[in-house]
Amino acid sequence: MSFFAKRNSRAFTLIELLVVIAIIAVLAALLLPALGAAKERALRISCANNEHELGVALLILADDNNNLLPDLHYQPYGTAIPGTLNPPATSVYGRWPWDISSTFTTNVIQDGATRKVFFDPGNAAFNVDQVWNFGVAGAPGSDPGSQSAFRITGYVWLLPGSGANAGGTRLEQPYWQTNILGVPAVANYMANQGSPSKCTACVDVIARDPVSKSFSKITVGGLPSSIVQRTSHLDGSQPVGANDLFLDGHVAWRKWSDIYNAASPTTVRVFGGGGNSPTFIF
Image (cartoon, rainbow, N blue to C red):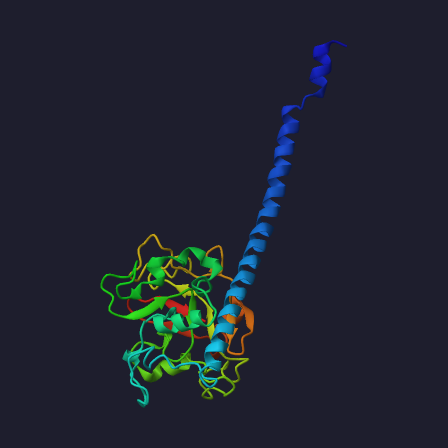
């Protein structure tokens, strides 16, 4: 046998190469969803760690205040004078559920949290100065027209006087949980109210654009278009669920099907700010 014959006998044919490429493509198609799911699970765990760190700081803040978390309507968090009965919703800084008093974030950071944990790793790109400083007058990256004192975060807040409770009516109370650790919240407002182990302090963002109904891109609001406002945890274009931080400090994951169940509307919390505001579901 000649040298060339021996060399040709070791070569792959075109059909063999195509078969190998096809096998690789099939394996890649099988592995990519698994890799994507693993990445999403890792983001959920990282998010839960963030919320746990926030929970520890909130417990320290409450411990320094006779086991009370602050009502953010009142000074120094809002504009209402302490002792005012039924403070107006206009005393709250911020209007959307991820808005929270900048004094509150400062105090939570002083009690051990960091700016990073105020943003969900599921949408880590949201953690930029133009978001964090948006409502803080004069801060780097803030809205030039801002005269308020709130920060946009990567979580929805359910404390009295948070952005979810703004809007001008006392009907905000259904969005509260409780600001007193160990004391049940007002009865019969929402199915999940009660003891601190059932009351949520903050939760991942699930938001829907008011025009396009998209969960993956919110186009309204005053942030630059380069900053993607969206639901934190997505499977393609649909929400997969959210982590909840409870007032006793524990964090639990809830599936989207458990959060939004059209057949059981009393378990669904929806904040629709109207007009130029997205719908937040939590």
